[in-house]
Length: 317
Image (cartoon, rainbow, N blue to C red; front, side, top):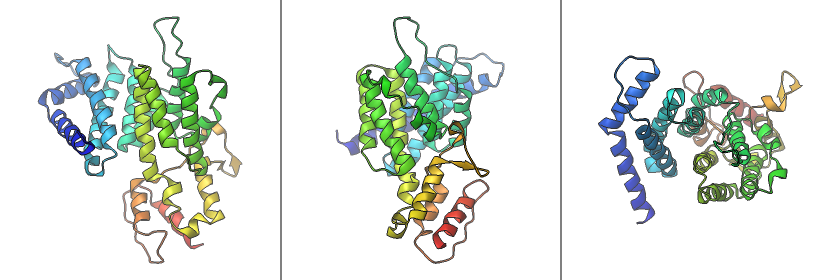
């Protein structure tokens, strides 16, 4: 089976699941139960959990296929909702782990506000082992980085990379991959972070660490999407901007988020802006930074018009 045939198979299976009456019924039931509705529930948590795993895994795979992007996003959003419902009321699964999976899926599907709210709720969450002899400190180290990434606090995340943990091969591989990505986000340094993140995911998958490997799988999908939206990539497509120290400093101010009210911000409160929203991306693709023509920007509230205007002002200054 080649990649085209595999993508078609995934598409067929995802559409079949999303249109399955049993799936729809169970999802509506758990949503109603979460709202404290009174009825005889028949939904199966294991059924919903397994379907969410399937939707998130295969939705993440299909994100790289432009012709199936809408289906991938729908699948990830459905998975995010199921994880969220289970994270609120599950009697069988780790609720906060489910909420973290929900955050990643929402973020991948483009619902960053949902992801941010859920991540803030689980800020203190750590994995625990039922057996004293099982050390989960390395797992929690990765978990903390994923939470900081979802919170867009990349500066803090980079500052918390601990090289003293490199006695653990998995952490050494993870540190190598995530540090490369942080360097790209904050300073535009080109490197092989995509391959490195993939190697980190494969290490934990081959180690049969399913909770961490699934988180890293979703993180890898998220980092791959980042390249499409990266401000380093999209704001520096012209030679004039690439060679401009003013633009380089401006982009670094966005990614490092150093100042507020003429003061240096605390590292823990810095929110990196390292991607363009879809609306902003479309404006750049239409020639916002390459043309001297006038533009009329018409978009709803809170879709990024001010930032587009800011880019235009800087471009003509």
